[in-house]
Amino acid sequence: MNARGFLIAAAAIAGLWAGDPASLRADAASDAAQAATARRFAAIRTQPLLLEAFLREMPKGGDLHNHLSGSIYAESYIRWAAEDNLCVATATLALVTGTCDAAAGRPSAAAVLQDPALYSATIDAWSMRNWPADRNGHDHFFAAFTKFNPVTTRVGDMLAEVTSRAAAESVSYLELMLSPDGNVSTRLGRESAFSRDFAQMRSRLLAADFNAVFTQAKQRLDSAEARRNELQHCGTPAAEPGCSVTVRYLSQVLRAGPPEQVFAQILAGFELATRDPRITGVNLVQPEDDPVAVRDFSLHLAMIDFLSREYPSVRVALHAGEIVQGMVPPEVLRFHIRESIAKGHALRIGHGVDVMHEDDPIGLLREMAARKILVEIALTSNDVILGVSGKRHPLGMYLQYGVPVALASDDLGVSRSTHTREWVRAVEEHGLDYATLKRLARNSIEHAFVDTPTRTRLKLDLEAAFIRFEKRQAAGWQRAATR
Image: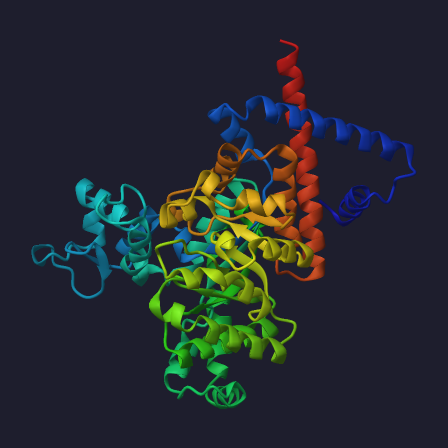
């Protein structure tokens, strides 16, 4: 779309031409198409194949909770490992470096590609496909990351895969969690003694070689994005659809580490978010039930509280409530979401599955609704990791109390899911109607950690995409009705 066309579309979508007769006719046609689309959706919602086709094409806005390393399918990792001359230890099915030796139980990844049984077993070990009955989903899920980790350095290839998939499924924005600095901050933290005097720790770290954090992060992102552009031919007449997907990054913090390393990573995230507009916020990752994460939960929030006052413009999204009864002592379930908001300054909560086990859960839901704290809902992930699905999942409670929610993928590759599958589950398991789905898509852009011009563009693009989608659906519905 050229500049004039963009301005015309913006004005039309924003309702600035409300007094123009042509605009009124367009609005009426748009309303009719939306109503026809809602009727078509109601008619097919119990027909799985038609429902999936409908939702694959439906504009979905953004995916706000997406771990880049977990979003890659195992097949890609095996192929890249073969290109990088890595080996697979057959005893553990984990990637290893060094000299490959099939006789010693270390065949090359290239050899794995030629061995159907080993290839299949490797995919199962690196994902939730056919996970063994004698191992719970939580443990199998998180163990997968340690197996393919050596090949997750191919960030550019990973960006190309996730953006291509997003474009194919009508997702226009991705907010990806990764370690932008390649863990330079982790090393600096390891070299620094921990102190509960956070101001002193911050000064000490910044006085160290902290410029290496900025240099490494910029180089890694520049290189990865250049590789993505190369693979997708972005900026050329042969540009692939994935080029149109907007990408931003959340600087992730490994919360199961020693406190000095966690503080250094959080500091790096806040500093990077003030220096590089591509890095839009901070999040804590790794299992919430990890013993270190449980022990230091409030300490980590105190770190974020301190740094949020030093860097008030930096936005925070936090994993909280990704735990269930029996996984941790009951008292652990009582405060993680509330404290993540009150002390961790979280504008978005990832998962929030245990909300009804929090102290005064109804009061918390009302507070989240009033403060517009969005919850990132990852249905497949919550099912395979926590065993929570259907009526046991709190999505309905969040909607009932007016808490903004958005559907998210979490780790599509490891979960063996798709963006569309998350929306299908929302309809089949929670009975969402078309108007609610549309609201969730809009929420994902409204609560994205982006600057105002980018948000405006993404919102306009989403509304224009809905107009086109509903026009096609209405036309198809009318043709079907006249047969």
